[in-house]
Length: 109
Length: 114
Image (cartoon, rainbow over the protein chains, first blue to last red):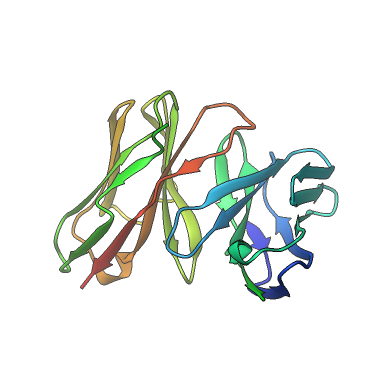
């Protein structure tokens, strides 16, 4: 089976930095995606890693270590609008994505 | 640019009825995916198509579920007969068939089976 683990919930304060971890044990690996999903809305793409290292995109960065089966999403200068669920997804083969159950982030003033 | 369009946005129906969910992918995208999202199981892939051809339907839960893609701009997911445990949010997503391209999701159909 495919196993993707994320913390269920995290809380942080506006302006702070938060790191959301994702560990995976899957039968294959062809890249890792992070999506953001606000309550009642569709998931939206945040980042993609296929090689080890850090990818930076504005306030958001994502890191991957393939040997450790580990990724994290780093959110800087948190804003209230960052309150959402963050989904980690591993691509198996060419296109199939397997999603973790998501981490619900609550940003407080 | 229009994103992925799903209809209906909400559907409430009684157990045993047939349910049809519809999806129009982003123009030019040649891959289409159907997902189901529940609190307990998260987001699960049901089936996906490349160039209108079903590639992997291993996530389709039972024979009560079927999906078609008659052309590049339209797909349906049908449940017949529906059961209360089918209640979930069903998302359609599309992408280019290129390895680093993300999937773009529609707004979903919230399905409630009474």
